[in-house]
Length: 487
Image 1 (cartoon, helix red, strand yellow):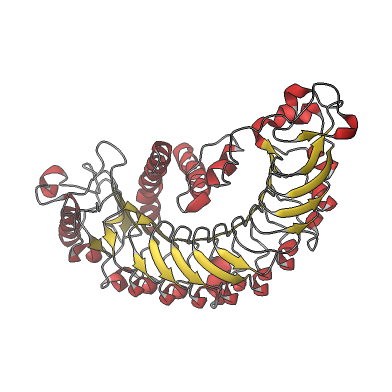
Image 2: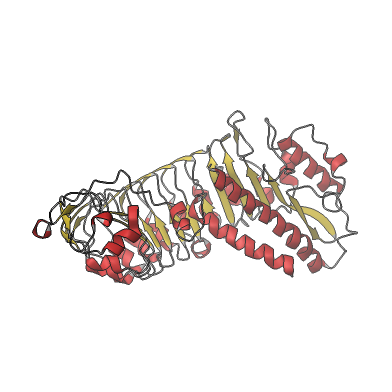
């Protein structure tokens, strides 16, 4: 993980702990009205379970009872937050990993203990960089049902030693709202039982070694279909075609299935994803052309389909029906035909990649008039005619405009000065002046569209942890934390 990604992750986990401490430790107590936080006790049984659970992860040398005799009171444990229930303190948040200097950190032989599942009010359980490759550890298959009534968030991030399959028993966590298993070493199929998590709002399984097909159960239950907002299974080895049941996820905002081995045509049932703002299917083996249902996704802001043998034409879509589109990556799809004039209606478009296809015809001059365009890649096609863009356009775009490897394309060197001429494009013969020729091609490649580019266009450096949607989480947590600080 890049350094800036680690900083962002650490910041978000810190905000999570801050929110839990400021909000969680008071809200429940106020609701119960049975004891003040300063005088409320903690059950000895609960305290022993907490010490034993933590000791299993940080090592036997950790003296919990000596260092933290009152873990929910005057001697709090970093990464642990508590709530009041019926006048008693209970741990509700446990976050383990090197976030801060005094954070709980796993030992070289960290392990799960049975006492972890005795923390019956646990709402959030998070592990970051806890299991190294030298300590291969599976996620426990049993006892999750003990936390079914309380656990809302379960996260394992950047644990290369976390091995084995995703336990089907996680499907019994009926209160779960967020399941994040990112950059671990999990293998096997995605359990169909996860479709029973009807309160789930975020499902992020990216950066593992998962295989097999995406289970159809994820879209079959109407309750889950209305709740799920984010689905990210990118950077795995998933195979097969997309189940048509995914079209039932009416509330879904983000779907990222990029960098897998998926294939087949995109099912027409995906037309039901009308709330979708991001669809990322890059680097798979999808075929069947650009599906017409895309033009019905009026909320779509980022459409990333590059490096799939889709084929077909761009003309079959009414691009003007996607007014919110800001990022469009259609590179290396095997597209044929002309670039539609209707693309000039995408006034919010900032990134357009049509490179490495078999597009023909002229380049629509109005593409340069898109008010927000910041990157335009047309290289590696069969485009012809005169580029009718101004010197100011080429100067503003710089390396973020590419049109080389189009043998029939040329530019007017009367209208465009040599200093800003498009690299690798010849001067049109009928207007060529003395001394003009082919400008040397810039030695550069089109940067891959990713969540980092999308965020950079907002002036923010982002990391794809779960994919793209980590920023949404951080921003929400920042707002929530600040709210409770000032209330």
